[in-house]
Image 1 (tube, rainbow, N blue to C red):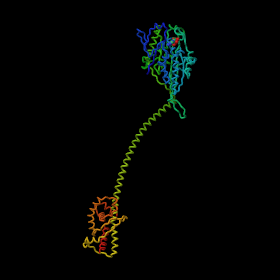
Image 2: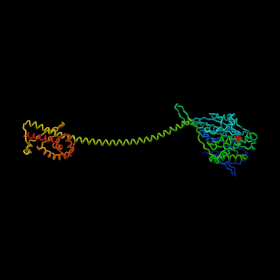
Image 3: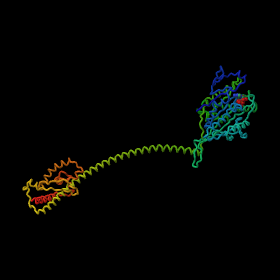
Image 4: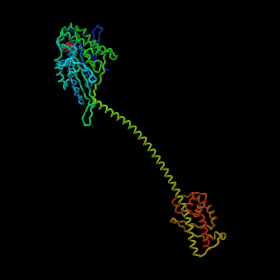
Length: 559
Ligand SMILES: Nc1ncnc2c1ncn2[C@@H]1O[C@H](COP(=O)(O)OP(=O)(O)OP(=O)(O)O)[C@@H](O)[C@H]1O
């Protein structure tokens, strides 16, 4: 929301008028001393102020905004002979707002090299409430239309494509030749019509360019803005202008349209539009054409031309009241963008792609979180697997230890068997050698001392091929049962020693004590050892028998 910018420009006075002028200007205020009326505006330009300064005050910004796509309207308002045409058209010596705007417009466009512009100009007048085309004189009584695409526009109005300020000004000069100008008592070249100089800019936004599959560049947005520069006909009093006939009729239409403009401004200043009230835009061609500029989509500035002469004090006061009301009118300018169907599709496609990219981005975040969770789960599984592997390894070691002990026990048993068999073979050999055998066995007849002299020394070799380095002395020759009892007593001690003994690899090379082995074969307390006996199929009865045989052979050997 931005209100209409209103400035006041006072035209130079003759020395006589200057002496009698009741008006005083102080800053941006104008008033009549000792009078209740005091007006304040955005700017007040004195009689010595050049048009360039007037242009710089606001119009320059409106032109720049028009290049960016905002509608703009600047119009000069005031009584006849107040300097409106001088302000808007100017002269060769002092160009007016229109030529200054045209040059500025092209300058701005040239600086915006990345944009593509298409400029058109039109020039029309509203004469006696009829719209005529000043560029094409045959185009008379044109009608005002309104539609969604073009808004309010004059149908059939010539729109010349222009490429330079000089071309524009030439066309403008040409149009001036068709304008209704008449002589009145107040102004030799009095404008008898309102003129509207219009520049339309169609801008294609380079930022919206796209390259299609064929590599061609197309634009999907076109900004269209309209700059209206209006030189109104001046309000006049027939008594002062001396208008008669045609001039009187012209003056009547001028006054009527200006009165409608005043009413529209008054209504807008009172907030009628925002309150849903009626604003009589359609009561005149002027207000209808300028409707977007008055409370609508446009940056608007009004330059109120006045004369400070005493003789025109009432008209000046009336103009200042109009301008003062206009200060309270607000507009809502915005960029006007036109999209073709193809352009609309392209833009929507672009938006969809952007949304899809955003969606994929958020989905990717979700996936990353999922991957992180999976990685954590995987890590936990790996740790669990390693823990189980360690436990398995420990179990294997324990199992191997058990197997090793079982094998040791088996070897000991096997050694015992081998020892028994070896002794048996030696006895047979000695028996054959001596040819002597004892038929009965009398243990009581044998003293331990006697037996000790005859106790053989046996070199025992392991059946597994291991060399037994230890030499074991045979104990006293006892009956088998007695021997077993003795062994059990001995093995209790042996077990204790064995428990304290390191079961290293060195132990494998030691020939087991046969007595210990006998313990292994007969001891019922140790279930594992009984199991070992069963596994190696050593029958204690057989050992018993073999032992008896050995004793007999041994005795035979002695005797
Ligand atoms: N600021 C100014 N400096 C110098 N001369 C001026 C100035 N304003 C107006 N004039 C002169 O005053 C005369 C009338 O001005 P102008 O034609 O612009 O008035 P107008 O408001 O357009 O009148 P009308 O409504 O009858 O067309 C012209 O000769 C113009 O050169």
